[in-house]
Length: 142
Ligand SMILES: [Zn+2]
Image (cartoon, rainbow, N blue to C red):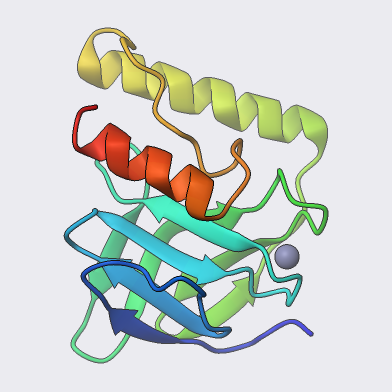
């Protein structure tokens, strides 16, 4: 069942099992994580960086920008997490997704000069502990 609201939890490291309806934020790992709000059970990790997602905390609620598009999951959910509310957005067509990725790539190239290493992308990699381990490795420069 799709959710309309969520709460948040600031954590040092993510728990083994993410609870439904909670947006976990780890400043330590510069990553936010949640279980897909459509109810499909997929774990979604969103990296916080100048070219990925950003997080806003107004003292009560956490918002994530831009929208979360779970293109690699069967559900293809797309939603915006703002002020504790899940705003459901349109599903993107394959062309729109590819275009979005191309824009994203260009933005990164512009920002960093070149793309030397391809970081793990939430939308591409299977979610879960294996992928998260890779993220940790990547973040610590291994
Ligand atoms: Zn889902």
